[in-house]
Image (cartoon, rainbow, N blue to C red; front, side, top):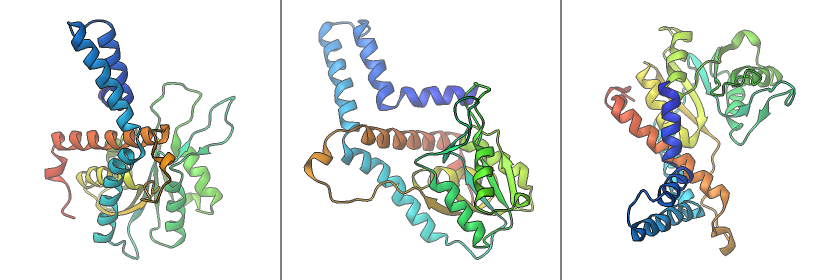
Length: 264
């Protein structure tokens, strides 16, 4: 139940969630005088507009990706670790009667990078960690689809450890620890660059020594024509992703992970 409430709270604090909440409250007259309702309506529109600007999305998400770059440079991956851990989020599972095969999404680099690391001999085992939040029984969790991808890439089945029940990064870390046991402490953690900082902290809290392997780089700091700086849905998506990560950091701070995380 706590995981579901967290998801709803994060949505409510996202740009679109705030816009809906503020607009609804102003429309229902919950802010008293008409002047205040008008101000709240303007505020709702302005924050949605601001988070839809490419430079805002790039700035928010770019800070997270730059942090992952520094982490990766400060913790170079050794020739061998105990396991590769690939976090879910890179594909959509099968759906009975609609989608016969899993679909890679825009974070599909995660599974591709995991396969590359295994082929390079970095670790003898690979954990595929990806569960399912939806209640629809026809939709498959991510982990089986990740397994199918790895098998197609030539990774042997006996090297794969499947974790298909986690719904959050916190659960990814705890269940991976349960599956690997106390003997496996050094891991190569594969996830999107924007997600790396929070993931490392949770996995360190679970007792792992983490070597980050970032992928799915989204902010390139490229030159753009004027019209490319106008508001667009992709920028709103970047802003929303970044805000979710920053709120996740706040949750980590409240839980004490910043203070009790690993030494690296």
